[in-house]
Image 1 (cartoon, rainbow, N blue to C red):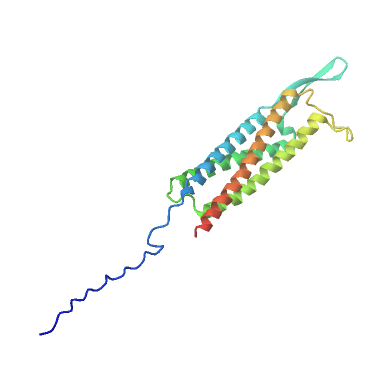
Image 2: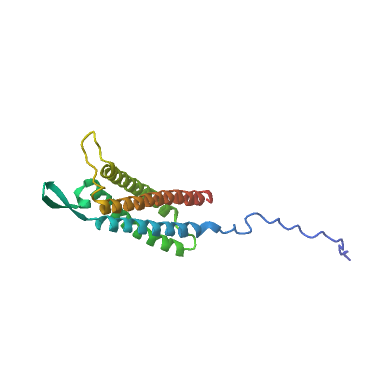
Length: 203
């Protein structure tokens, strides 16, 4: 009669859990980027819009003496200078651009994984392009405004801000707002680069 083997066998060794058995933790910053991006684009829209409104409403009329006992009305308007026209055009483009990109940020915020790598790359390219446009417009308008404030005796350009005080105040305010818009665009470029680098590092 065959004997039955009663030797106790050790339990079968189980495979150790691999590091891939547990799904990787979800990227906690996935919603951080779109939220900050959307907030910055709202700031860009507000500053650009207010700057445009302030510029186009800067018209001021003064009675300028041209001869003893003779005065004529003279207007100061933004469209008298090509630099100011470019300034208004650049800020108008920035205002429209902020609306479009803010809508894209809202859509990215609703997605589970946040904005895509391709969208972040496009944001970097166009934000940097618009930054150059707005910064150039701010510098050009600031240069003309400085001439209006201080004049230039070497080329006999007279200052006008002592006469058109309200006009110059409007432009000083709009240039300050445009500077804030430029800084906001710079922060957007940095933010998009940061989010894009995080996405690439996770691959």
